Length: 137
Image (tube, rainbow, N blue to C red; front, side, top):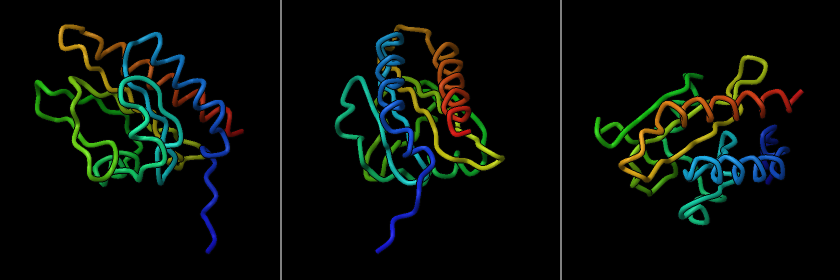
């Protein structure tokens, strides 16, 4: 069986380092996804995400190629992977767009309910997505 080539997957090592840096700076759980699965993660409960298939909701966001911000307060959180439920306070999702196509996404999940990090998290996720898109050439 042939496995589909993932451009973002080719950045797995740098994606893991970037996820760890973002998680350390923001205190958020950070995931980097290609079109099929989570290829890198850092922060709270990150091990349960690595290698897992993406949720349909996340795939739909990636198909639209639009970054998004979701919150528990607004009841808009989405599951990141299949057979999971969102248990954070806020999510920032930035799609990695390369040559006009969605190549993956950067997901930040903020757990501190008192922290007003949603705008910062959204900007950091966007910065990460742009950085990774640039690395694709």
